[in-house]
Image (cartoon, rainbow, N blue to C red; front, side):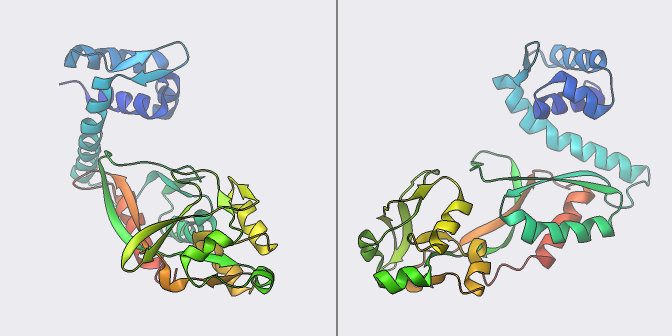
Length: 283
């Protein structure tokens, strides 16, 4: 079996897409990382990585190998630390991903408490609005709560146009559509005990939720959004929620991490703190 360092080099190449970046992360020379990859491929008898001068991509065999080997390597490193008596607490770099609007208000205060409690950990928080599909990923999860999705509008809009009392009436209202996603212009509701999609349209649409919220506040039309994203607007009286009785079932929110029988201490501590501090019951 190849050395553990060879496996770690492969994992970093897979995750960074570059031998050079993998060498930087591992604090090893490029030649050493390249030798590790070659040695590993000879050992398994397969090409795991397609190499070019600027980029490295996993082969089909490499993708399958990565999914199986990463949890095992994490387990081995944890076992080494425990055996050496050095596993006294979370340490290293914790990489966290979250939606752009969710991170600052909900995660950053928890991250601050986490870093204060565990000064040996550095946190790399990456925020994005991109949709990430994880159907085949080898991940573990912990449910943290569920989030409502609501229709909302400005008082000025309702004063001019009235309030819809049924989702079907949205076809007669100006609705502001987000132009990205799987089904733009299709809003989900619970009607007669069943999930139904209602098509909506309007004169203004955007790919950015910040622009949609501004348009709704300006009275251009109705919006559709997770409640947590507009709670501050509701509390300030800038928008009002309608059609509450037809809201779709709340969307569960989970913390996800790489599959492992015993995840690293830094991951366990962060997930435990999330479960303790994150309050989503009213959202």
